[in-house]
Length: 332
Figure (tube, rainbow, N blue to C red):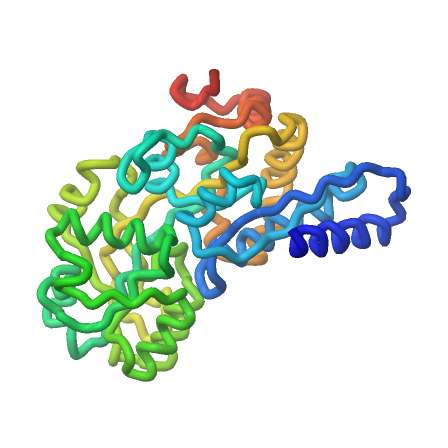
């Protein structure tokens, strides 16, 4: 509660500095992201900054907060501790439909827009990468960071590895760290690898290659492995990280990806959601200057791969722009 009061006070100060009357009603929306070092946080901060720049005079401000990622973000939306959140397609699908780690459907949020591809980076010290394939983790029996507890990173990592018969706790000894702490631990030799899904170029992976050079790598996936992983949730697809994306990376990395999307909890006014979506799509160059992953945010991709029905305010904007919306994404 105290943190929210501090955030609200900061937002009010920001609005007043723009010359808005003190009688003006201000809504400060909290956007849950993930840990620093990945893509969720910088993009979340960029979206919040854009909202503050363009909508403060209309009484709408935003603050991006760090979190453990998709898993925690679902809880934050449920508990009304966050108003918007960036989620993995997998976690959105599991939560909304009551699958995987969720025993019951979690129907308290909707989609706002597809964002960018969440690309799987299974990093491993080169001396343990016998083939350069994800199956190098089978029987590894070494300390490996699977992501922070309760995070989308942990959830998606365990889902992917489990589909391939790689058991966390048996084949790899799990360590629960965020992105940057994972790379620090690899550099120090405390762990041998880490699961770091995010939109390329990922700051933590860039630092890994810069510091470790050819002593570290990112593992590949075959088409057969992709088919096994995608069998249950239908959210993953092939993604090739082009050579040169990271320092010293001379060959493409054949990995997999799933969509990330912006979600909103039920109860946020439709007109506010409409204005926020409109602001995002009318100011994409601003987001492009913050992070390369945002180049994937395009109106023609706005509803592709969304696992949860759209918020009515978002659907209204897309319909005005002529975007074809599948019936399954239109909230009843």
